[in-house]
Amino acid sequence: MDRRTFLFAAAGIAALDTDAEAAAPTPIIDTHVHLYDPTRPQGVPWPDKSDATLYKPTLPDRFRSVTKGLGIAGLIEVECSPWLEDNQWVLDIAAKDRIIVGTVGHLDPGKPDFRKHLERFQRNPLFRGIRYDFRGQVSTPDVVSDLKALADAGLELDSPQPDPVLMADLVRLTDRIPSLRVVIDHLPNVELPTEAQARSAYESNLREVGKRPQVYAKISEVLQRVGGQVSDDLNLYKPRLDEFWDIFGQDRLIFASNWPVSDIKGPYPQLLKVVRQYFAGKGRAAEEKFFWKNSLAAYRWVKREPSQP
Image 1: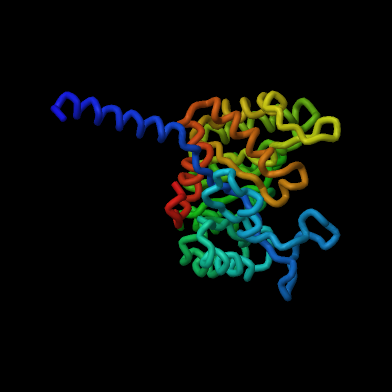
Image 2: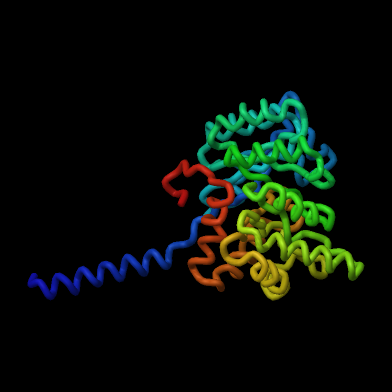
C-alpha cells in the first residue's frame, strides 16, 4: 500500500468512527429514583399500604427490569424516608450495586445534630447532597448556616416541587448562599397560580433563578392524560418545555423520572420518549448535556461502571 492509499484508508476509518459515535445512543443518568422495601422488618414510612401502585419492593433490579433496553446507564437515588438510618440503608445498597452513582439523602438543617450527621454521611463519596423543604426557613439563622456548611462540603440541595412560596424563598436562599448548588425537582408538574398577580410573581421568580448558574431544574413528571389516556405526543408538551429551555438553557436542564411515582402517570418508556424527542431536536450536544453532563455538574456523581459516561 502506497502512502496516498494509506492516508485515504485512514481517513475513511476516522470517518466511520465519527459516524459510529454520532449514531451511538446518548447514555442516560436518571437523577430521581426512589428506593425502598416495604418487606423490611421495620417497614417503610412511605408509601402507604393502601397504594397498590407504589407499595412494593422498589430496588435496583426492578429498576433495571423497567428500563431494560432504554439506555439507562446509572441512577441517582433521592431519599423518600425521614428516618435517619435509611440514609445508611441506601448507601449499603449502593455499595453492592454500581448502577447507583449517587444518593440525595434526608437530613434536617437547623437541627442540633445536623452537622454531626452531615459529617458522618459525607464521608461516603456516593452521598451527594440532601433534599430539604426550605419554605419559610430562609430567615432562620441555624438553617442558613447549616445549608452554608452543605455548600462548603461541596454537596448540593434538592428542592421539592416549587410552589410560589418556595420559588420566592429560592431566590432569597441563593442570594444568601451563592455557592450552594440547587436542583429544582419536578418543575413541569408545578400547578401554576390562577390569580394573575400571583402567577406573574411566580414567573418572575422562576426567571430570576434561571439567571443563576448554580441552579438546575429537573425535567420530570412530564406526562399528562388527555381524554383518560396518557399522551406521548410531543406537541402537547412542547410549549412548556420551550419555556424551561428559554429560562435555563442547555446547561442546566436535567433528566429525571421520579420512578416509581412516575408509574402513576404512565410507563417509563413513554416519559422517556417525550423528552428524548424534544432534546434530540436540540442537537447531539444539548441531548448529552440533558441526559448526563448537566447532572454531573450539578451532583458531581461517581462513575462506577464502564457503560457510564
